[in-house]
Image (cartoon, rainbow, N blue to C red; front, side):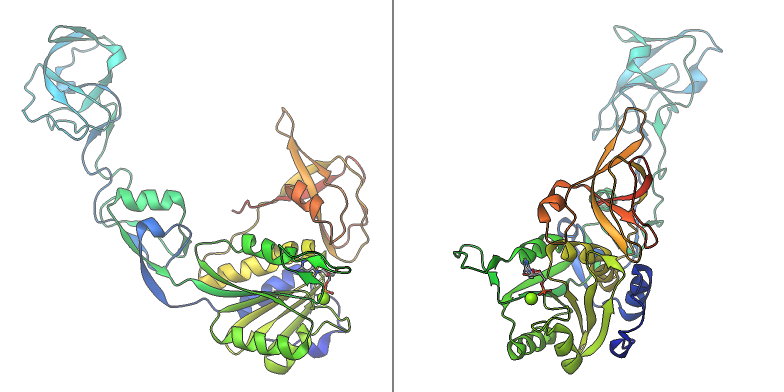
Length: 414
Ligand code: AMP
Ligand code: MG
């Protein structure tokens, strides 16, 4: 890790530089454990999974209809076959289909060996035990082939992969009921500040409720993370230091909010300097300039700003990618695209801004974005109303109504 403490007079780090530093500094956990498939959602797959079977396992019907052999067709004329039995999903036809015969078949049912085609039930006429096929009957249709989805022995899911609901379905379709996953990250959270009041307590003059910890709890909700809430620590240097050191001993990550700036009561950077390794950043983003990143022993430390909107922005843009990397998950790039801005936006050149926007789409599929309102880093209400960031690059000096801007919808990753 590069020590930037002595480099604070240097220009602010761009968000891209900050993410590069994260990439260099963070080493994924290597411990793995077994997980039952039903508990594996959101866990990071540790070993590739190969399919023990062909999927589909049998040749089966893609339609409800009648299975027949194409050699019984009549050269472009209508023809009739006699009904020899039924193949149900899960209960295959037991007999042997003879020339001139067909069988009733349902979606997912095994196609008898002698048949190579299935016709939809809507296309035939049934007269007692005789099935009349039309002249335009097509051969070799509506049969799902063995292994056409996944071949036996083929890689079902490669690593790295954070398992989705669809992955669980795919693994289950191969009969896999247990997977090797990376162990959970152990993450400790603190709020710092003399002004913070726990929920349920009356608000004394000059105090505020602790919104950051509630929010962080939500932002960190992930099956790959195990969170310990260390509550609020007052602005007391010794207390902070003791708690940081204690938490760093048995957690992979410590995340704090508040006290990361350069005010009289902002001790985070100083403590990190004295008991750990510091990479103190001032990042060229708004909101969220001050962010302390470092290590205490082998524990990664993120000292986020105090203002709630800055917490969300720095968490999503910096901490979330770092945690993903640490957990062994592949990087997830936020989806960004262009929209027409329907509000004028104020901005000074210098820092990349994440303004809060409300996204919409017209009947032609074009995207529009409006400002969600006040943009102060303490204004959580506009953040709650918004559905995307309007990402304004460092050099941007404001936006006029009708200008094209880059938007990043919340919680959409590619
Ligand atoms: P600081 O970084 O400690 O100077 O805090 C910056 C601003 O964020 C101040 O207005 C703090 O009161 C506010 N703040 C700090 N921590 C929290 C918190 N946990 N919840 C809500 N606001 C906070
Ligand atoms: Mg403070």
